[in-house]
Image (cartoon, rainbow, N blue to C red):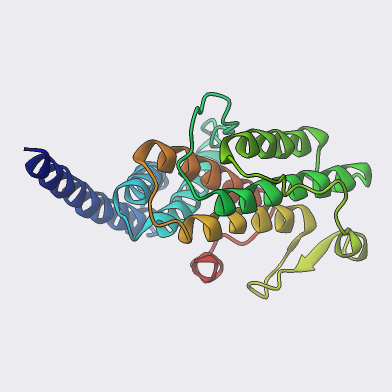
Length: 243
């Protein structure tokens, strides 16, 4: 019986993965088309939801689903603005309600380090009155870092008190992202570097429970969305290089 139940669960996941992927790609094609704005807006919202389902349901499409969910979510926000509708952003994930993340400690520690570093960089940029850099964003990064470290079970804390800021000071307005070669506002680059650490860590994780996937996917989408909102290019040419 346990073996039969496992087979049924696996079949259900495969069915959900396939249907979610078909829905995601179809909705993405629609919102990228030249059709009426309202149709494109609704399709973008549907695509964001379907790509999130792809990330959670398809074992080999976790990072792909996250990247495209963020892209579709941001597109829906932009289309909402053109329609005069209230634009909604992904909710900030703080992990305060999460009791356990069954992720390899070293992979989770890399996210902890990335979040703490992003918080420090945002503090520096906020002090320099850089556009989009605020102390509240810096605090959110550091809060997430603290919570994830407490969930990691790691023996040593990867966070550092101070991080190198040479690049921040040398490029107060915009910087070339070495990972993609694209130029982006400095605050957007900080957020994208943080998001990239999430994607790298998740790509290295072979097993992750569905609840953990849902939390991690939501947080990664939030980081990507913020990078787009701050000016990082959200085109496929930029996104696909992050995978």
